[in-house]
Each structure stands twice: as structure tokens, then as C-alpha cells.
Length: 372
Image 1 (cartoon, rainbow, N blue to C red):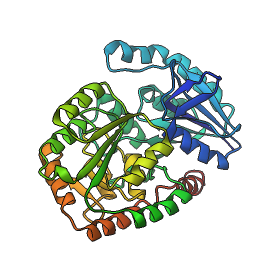
Image 2 (image 1 turned 180 degrees about the horizontal axis):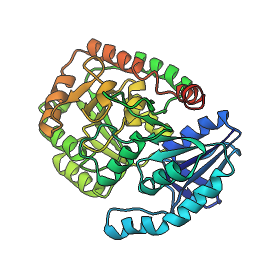
Image 3 (image 1 turned 90 degrees about the vertical axis):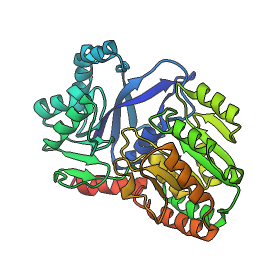
């Protein structure tokens, strides 16, 4: 069986000609190829130097079909999506003739016209993956339209979380991000991890206010127990990175900004850390970084967005309600002054609660639920 995956995943060409793509998506496809004769990935090829988080494909059975990058925040960029739509549809149409089944990853700018096209003009077997907040109350117009279309589908749709009045064809799927070996390694890391001062924190994701970076800085600036903090690691990049660095330096906070990092190095930070911070108000589904960090004994201090609290609760982490810097300061004080034995018990529980986030589980569910 041959599979086509259509996404907005960023790809780049290395100096030796090798195509690499955003690590999280490429890792998923590298595992998924075990169950298909061929996977064709239609996605964007960007100019420039690939970030360290990019990965190559590991199998010759995976073929990449490039699209010219489209999208952006201003009106001209959004208009360009419509202008490029015929070329994108033609590429998708040609590729679908070569495969047996497709997956369209949403929400994305091109999803605005590809969902209607695939729904109305293509009979190929396929499914949709909605990676955003399925329960978002005030979603952007493009996201809301895509979600509405997916709710009206005959094809199956995989979503984050389990929700009241969820249509039968909308299936709860955990975002795959861990191998069986990493699950076993996580237990050993937690057994040897010390949950007493000084503590190490980490953040992984886009560096901006929606993701909670400013809330983190403000919370630690007002922390009475700052002497119990060893390091705060920020992994990722963003337009405001330099401003965040300057502010942290002026506040004399013990921070390290790493920029983008390859997956193995990110996991090394998780292994060293006691807590992962994600006080986000962005349109999250269930961020993979939370599951990855929990696997290695990082207790989550996170907001109540989308399906996050379906996996994080009082037994394995700390929920920010409301999601403010003041609330984060309060929860940080509570965490820093908790008994080490209780924190370790919570860490073991956190590890157990992400058991379903393995690539093996994801592959099994696709074979037994999606393609049955």
C-alpha cells in the first residue's frame, strides 16, 4: 500500500543536496514507513540553511514532492495562497493517482481549499489529521472553517483529546513522539533524578508571548525562592528572542537560550530538568514537548489549553488557572517547596501517563482503526 502525506511541513536542502524537514514530522514519517510500500510527502521546500531541529528521511521508500512556500500573516501573503492554489491542487491530484491512501495534515493555509477539493472531487481513501485545538472557542476564521468541514466529513479525522459531542468519525489520537527504547530509558532517568534544590527548568517551543515566554520571565522575576533554581533552559527561536535575552540578563535570571536544537540534544535537556514550562495561550492540540519531557521525569507546569489537562493533573503536574505570570509564580513556589519524595512519585506517574504517545501505538491505531 502506498501513502501520500500532504502537509505544510518546512523542508530545506542541505549543501550536499539532502532534503531535510521539521524533525517532529519527519520522525513520525520515518516510523510510519515500516507499514507502507512507499510514502510520498508533499510539503514546502524553503530556501536557506535548515535549522538544527531538521532531520533527513531514513528510508528510500520515502519520496519528497516539493511545493513553493505560501502563507503568512499579512493580506498579500494570504492572497498568494489562493493564487498558488491551482498549482498545489494539480500537484496533489497527480500524486494521488500514484497512491492508495492519503493523509492531509491540518489546520494549514492550504487546507482551506484542499479539504473542499478532496471532499468534493476525489474518491481516494484517506484521512485528515487535525493537530490544533479541536475545542477552541474563538478560532481564527481559517481554522474554524477547516474544523467545520472536518466535522462534516465522511472520511475519518484524527484529533487531540476526547470531547463531548465528538462526531463518531473524529477519532482521538495521541501525537506520536517516543520510541519503546525511550520509554524504558525514561524510567531509569527518573529513578536516578534528584527532586530537591537546586532545580532545573526547561521550555521548548516557539519563543513568543502566546507560548508563555514573557509569563515565565515575569514569574521568575517575582519568585521568592529563586535561590532554589539552578537553570532555566529555553529551547527554540522567535522574533523576540534577543529582547527576552536582554530582559533576563537585566533581571539576573539563571537562563540559557539554546535556539533550535536537534532532537537528541533536546532530550538531554529533559534528562537534566525537573520541570517543563508551557504557560501557553496559543492554539495548542497537545504539544509533543510535554509528553517527551514527562517521559523523562519533567513535571509539567502548564496551562489549561485544549486537551492538555486530559493528560496533566494534580497527580503528575501543576495546572495554571488562570494562565498568568502571578499564577505561575504561585505554582513555582509550591513546586519548589514540595517534598522530594512527592515530586518523584509525581514524576513516575507522569511517565506512566504518556504511555500512549509512542510511535508503535500510533502505527497500530492507523492499521487497526484508520485503514481497517
